[in-house]
Amino acid sequence: MLVAVFLAPLLSVAARPAGAQELRGRVLEQGSEMPAAGAFLSLLDSAAGRADATLSAKDGAFALAGPGPGSYRVRIERIGYRTWTSDPIELAAGAAVSRTFVVPIQLVSLEKLSVRVGDQCQSSRGSGEGLLTLWTEAKKALRVTAWSEKGRLALDVRRFERDLDPTTRQVVAQSSVSAVVRAHRAFTTLPADTLSTRGYLRGDTLLAPDADVLLSPSFASDHCFGVDRSRRSSGLVGLAFRPVPGRAVPDVRGVLWVGRATAALRTMDFTYTGLVFPRGADSAGGHLDFDRLSNGAWLVSNWRIRAPATRKSADRAVVTGAWGMHRVRQDTAWKFTVYHVEGGEVVSAGLPGGRTVLLGPAG
Image (cartoon, rainbow, N blue to C red; front, side, top):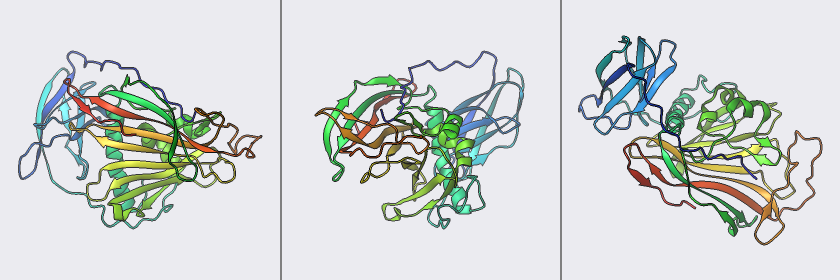
C-alpha cells in the first residue's frame, strides 16, 4: 500500500445552538457595489482565533455565529485580491447584528517574484515580500479546502491502482478501480504533528500531506520555502518547499503551483526524501489537483502517489518495504519493473442546498 487513505464517512453538519450570537449581512465590492460571491469570511475572536467561517452567497449574503458574547473582527479573503479585515464588532449575548461590508478591489500581482528556493527556512513568514505574497495566496485556497472538507461537501470518490512502465510512464496494467464511495473529502492523512515527529513512511506505507498539514505550524517549521519560476511559460508560479537541513525522518519536498494571473492554487507536485530506492529508480512522489466549485468551495479533486515496485504477477504489483534510511536493515538489491500508482478522483460534489456538480473521472 502506498498511502494511508481513509474516506471520511458522510456526517451531518452540526447545527448552530439556539440563542447564539449571530452576525449577518452582505459583502459588496467597493465602487460598483456588486455582490462579492464566494468570498471566505472568518469570524476572529480577540486572540485572532477563528470562531466561525462561511462563504458568501451569490448575492453576497453571509451568516456567522459567535461562540459567546464579545468583540470580533471579520476577515474576508478572495483569491487574487488583498485580504480585508473589519473593525471590531461587538456581539451581545443572543443578539443578531447586521453589517454590510464594502471591500476595496485590490488585485494581487504575482508577476514579479524574485525570492529563490531555500532563502527562508524555519518559517513560512520571512522578510521576502514576493514569497509572503505567494504563500498568502496559496494559504487562502488551502484554508477554504480544509474548511470545505469538514462536512460542507458530499463527494463521490473513486479510488484506483495502476502500473506504469518505468521508461515511458505509460499505463501497462490497471490493477483495480473501486466503486464510488460517498465521503466528505478525497483523502486524509495522519495529524501534522505526528508526521512532523515520525515522518511520512509507516512500514511500507507512504503518506501524503493534506490541506490541514500544509497549513500547520509544524510543517512550516520543518521546511524551507522559496519561489519556483520554472513553469513561468505555463502561466504558473510555484511555492517550493523542502525539509530543513538535518531533518532525519522521511519527509516531502515539492511545489504548490499557483496561477500567475489569477493567484489560484492549481496543483501540488512532491517527492519523498530520506528514502533509499533500487538503482535506476527515481524517488517516489505524488500529485494533487485543487479545484474551485461554483459556490467558492475548494477541494482536492484528484490525487495519486507513485513508487517503484516489482511486478510478481500479471495483475498485481507488490511494493517492497524496508526502503527507509531510518531503518537499520535495507534491501536495495531487488530490481523494480514498474512504478505502482495509487490514487483517487472526485466524480461529483454535492453542494449545500442539494445541487450536484459533476467533475467527471479525471484518470
